[in-house]
Image (cartoon, rainbow, N blue to C red; front, top):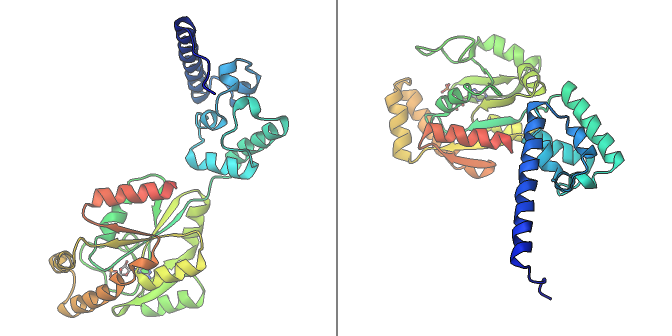
Length: 288
Ligand code: 5GP
C-alpha cells in the first residue's frame, strides 16, 4: 500500500523539522568534539533528533576516538552498529563507560606492515615517505653487508659483523632473518614489539624469505608486495642507482625474477609508478 499523500503544508513542515533536527545534531556533535559536552550527556537529552541519532555518529565525534577505536568499541561491547542513542540500554552504557576508561590506559596496538618486493623496486624510498607520518615506525634491520656510500650506521641499518649477527640469531633476537645475495639481514624483535604496543604501525622492509617467516609467525601482519611498472624499468632503476658491482647486479636481477613470481602470496600488490601514491595507499591500508 502506498503511504498517504502529504498536503503541501505538511510536506513543508516535515522538511523544516528535518532541517532543524540536522542543525540540532550538528550543534551537539560539535560540542562533543570540542569537549564542551560529555558523550554520556547525550543519553539524558530527550529531544527526538538526539534520541534518533546513530550511536556510531556520536562516537566518531569524541576526541581521541578514531575509526579504529570505534570498530573496537562495537566489537568488544557487542552493540549493534546501527543502534541509535535512544536504543542504548543501561548495561550497554556501562560497557561504553568501561571502553572509555580503557581508551585512556591501553592504546590500540599498531599494525605490522611488511613491505617486500624485488631489489631496486623503490621500497626504501617508499618507507622513507612513511617516516613522515607520526603513527608509523620503520624498523631498522641488522645486516652484515658493507655500508654503502651515504648510508648511516644505526639509521639505514645496524651494520654488524658476521659473528655479531650469528650471536643475535643464537640469542633469538630476530623476529625473522634471511640471507640475500651474500649477506645476512634480520629484524630485531624487541623494538618492533615495543612500537606495536605503543600503538605505532610498524613497517618492515624485507625480502621474500623474511616476509614468509612473518606470515607464519604473525597472523595479523599485512603483507604488501611492491611491483615495478615493468621489468625494463626495474633493470634500469637498479643499474642507475649505481650501488652494486656487476656481480651483485646480476645476482639481484636473478633474485628479482624469483621474487616477482611470489607476488600472489601477498595480501596486497601495489605497483610503484608514483612513490607518493604508494605511500598514501600504505597509509590507508594501515587504517583498515
Ligand atoms: P639492500 O642490500 O639493497 O639494502 O637490501 C637487500 C634486500 O634485503 C632488500 O630486498 C631488503 O628489503 C632486504 N632486507 C633488508 N632488511 C631486511 C631484514 O631485516 N630481513 C630480511 N629478510 N630482508 C631484509
